[in-house]
Image (cartoon, rainbow, N blue to C red; front, side, top):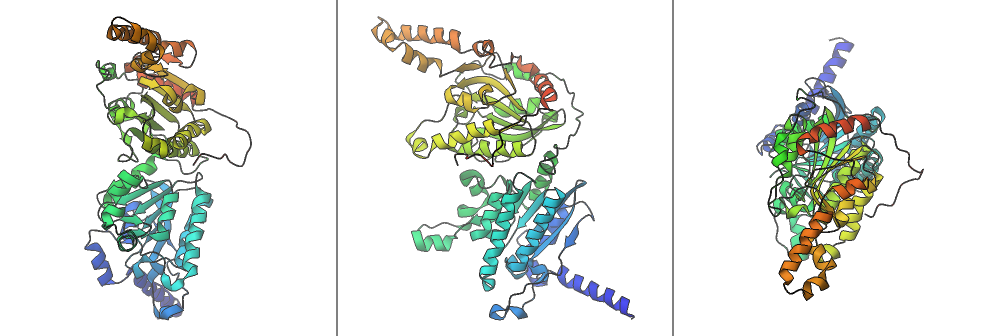
Length: 517
């Protein structure tokens, strides 16, 4: 064997040693839980044979507690780049079979390196988290590693899409990087996120809780709102990440990819003419409207389990990605509250950062009343929604289908917050409040002094309905651009998007505003 052949042989041996990850036993234990390995996850994410690994031979430099004798293949994290549906993406996947995927100095440097490269290239970064946390033997160097990652998360925010997949344990300081990214995917039963685990909580507070209830996928998708997607297994998680990427641009200087539909562009939606029930107390499903107007009836919904009284989702109109924010009359009558305000605000700001036009569909009776809402800061949280719409410079379309009352009328992308085109169905009711409440306030004395108070109240309610609960006064003021037939909604929205897609807006120069967080 000559010198060159020997060098090639050595490279193959090193490759084989690294590719073995944490060893046969550790890998078998891992896959027995129904989980993919780090390299399998990357293979599923990237197009066939397109993944190129970076820093495969990086090793730790720790000499504490006998660590100089410990070999950790790839230092517990696989990093690199490749193509996802033909588009470039950087990614890293922590390898829990290699020293529990613990994060140390060099492990963190590998992650930071691909984050820096993603920023230079202007392409998305995807992190697959499955780690035992900070490598205790490395002490402050491990903590410094986390800090370096957090710093880059903040710098990349609004520049390139950042996606986190929690595919195993993520605890302590490790949870903050995913929380700083744009979208968080979790896997049911096998992934967990928490600052302190069940044992610590039990010893400090006496509360008894298991891993899944404390920080599982369903918990974070329904209660905390930390996660956007709860997936059945690793494979579904990766498939849904790829679907999300298909709606997003590579960076903030590009437009989202446009996929021209086979669906007729100017088709009518006759089913929408009968969507609003005759009985005002009967709710309808806002998804029926979304499916009717979207290309091929398709939508993709982050945060589907959290604050379901408002919907945030991506659709395509004439092949263009559009971010939809819509009240859901089926849940709490579509009221706005603390959680819906946070959910919608963050989605609006993401879309604005990445040149995704916004479509707001309003059917809202107001902000949810109650002591807990007031004490919880509904004023501050509701202000986030007002702020986010006002700040957004992408094309903003508004459709009012039925009730749109009071402060919630303003908060749902009203013309006064910069909506570029505003449409209303003939069934739209735009007023300070509903007819019954308004009549009781305006005509209280007259009603109370009447011979038949109930009859007088009904008369005044009918009068208020005729005067105010229509879209025509708002249209007469120019706050609504057109009152349209429900069946023609898709046509009007596509035409509005076509004309506003070249929108340009200049704002005063400033470092940043001070959003009411």
